[in-house]
Length: 93
Image (tube, rainbow, N blue to C red):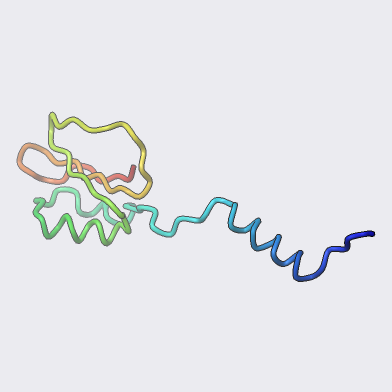
């Protein structure tokens, strides 16, 4: 007995192969268009706005001397501020 692949079987295999591939991430952070915000005083509302505008799923604000993890998260917005709570750097990771 010879088994022949059917169109339904091939379609199912194609769908399963698609499920096993790495998903594309539409929530990756992007800050290129936000660099104009450097020099602005940070507050809670601005943090929320920047997170949304950067399309970031998480955000962290880093002041001088703050410790942070070294893990890279392409969905995270990093906001570096100075001692006066002024934005000095915006980056993803």
